[in-house]
Length: 192
Image (cartoon, rainbow, N blue to C red; front, side, top):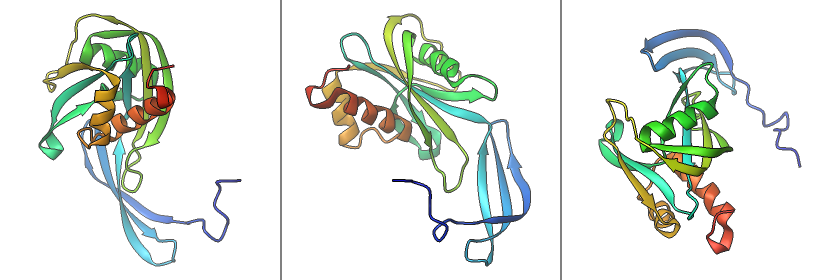
């Protein structure tokens, strides 16, 4: 079965004009004058991310997962997440994942694999996330950035899964990574 839309259901937007409204070192916001799929004029705002979003789920030899906790400014709330960060243009997302893992947790991965690619908010942004699973971990010193006050926690799998299922983990990249891990573990709960 093809996942391509048939011609009757394909949306066709036409960009008539585009203008940058705001820019900083991390994002740019543009407003486009468009013709909508129904042919009527409209506007569309797009947030352009200058970095790739990268997250990594550390899984140790005992099957425990590692999360970091931090205050998130936009929501003015504390959040438990996988280690995450931004990868500049030209940097391989795998390199970013390994760097963020080491900086935020002090962990160094002997093995890393891509488990998902995601469009995080595709109705308003072009942000792409790359999610990895890191194993064969060794411990070292963390080096968080000045904007980060991180708690690092090693959790057994049932506790991490409970946090995901009861809504204590709300970060979308963390949810995606943990759901992939749940599928991987299947009914037995042990990593493969």
